[in-house]
Image 1 (tube, each protein chain N blue to C red):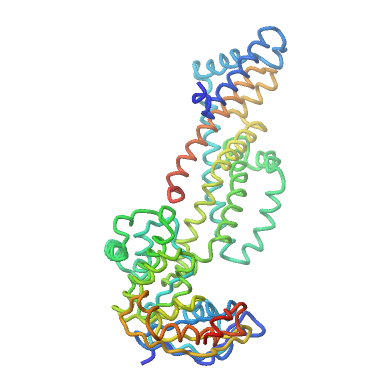
Image 2: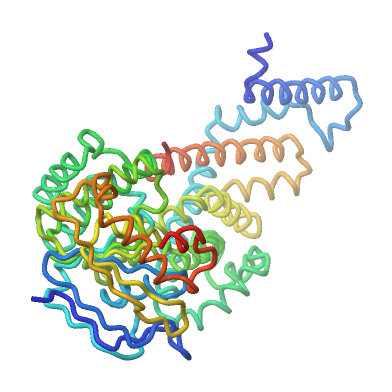
Length: 253
Length: 256
């Protein structure tokens, strides 16, 4: 029994199950106002219902499309600008203050602007997700290139490597390690951008459904959506970890 | 004929030079060591030869192309994301050798250096001594005519260090590679070198003395230390360095 409880994930599962059971019991005993806190069973029923009647699919498609496009675009832009700024000094002088400013503010405040510029369709959600991810990745890459191990640079130079070889053999692998370390955070940011963008103005998506649930005071739907988003992000986290383990296998003994 | 000739070399980082007006020559197949206190600019000399450090003044005349110079660093400096064989083959790949051929040559060198079967491992999966052997393979696979070594074995324990040094010594003797070794270890310098150059303290460090080592080749490291010329030369080096280093052993001085 003790060995069984020694496993961290089992202890976590037990703690979570206890919390849900307490919540369910409190709801059934009438201790929680159903207007604010529906019971876990009610939340599960609402969530399952969304899948069973198929109404969730267009919303999932919209959110996933926006998040994944934003993640892809944000990674591409962040990597390109980060590399360029680290290798070309004048570009760093231009980009660093802009990125610092974008990093310092809560970037979701740009959501209304993107709606004005790009409308309430997919474009504004992708744009917000892109900005959230790109700033994060920019600093990861910029810092990664600048902090590349100089011993490796000198090693490759004494073996006859020029700038192109250095980029291929030293900078790209170093930066990949930095980016992979930030990939999980980037996935979370991409979903934040997509959902917040939908929340501000849209006709589809999990953010739109959340907005609908809020305006109709539907706590069950709100909670079901929150759990759903958490579950999806968790799955993407695990995929990111698997990718990181594969790409950075040289880090493990 | 000299493979390397240095004249009036001054090195520093702006302002007063760390090392000034250095003259040094290295013949083909000759093994020379640079010893001296910390801060005397020993490492800077090696870095200047391969262009990793700007010189303030002076001449470095190399009778060999940059592709024929090998540099063994103090740190392993292996690419952590490349396997041992990929690291060993890196220089060849950079110089345009087809990858399959480069890897085959790298495998042969790894085997020669006692790393058979370990080529697929990443540096993290190797011991310090094994990593050092990979670094040696990476340099020797390029068939250098001139080998520059900056205390390459300082971080290794005594047993591994002696073994690797002996292996490397036998290789450079067989291949007639010229070597310039930077070291703090006077006994190591004497046991491997044909000539030991002693540097003074910096700034404006200079060569205090150049001592020829009349121990015949090929050499066995342990036997070399038992050679009749070894102990007197070691005392001579300590005398050369007296006043330049803190803590030079008084008894050696008295014995000399």
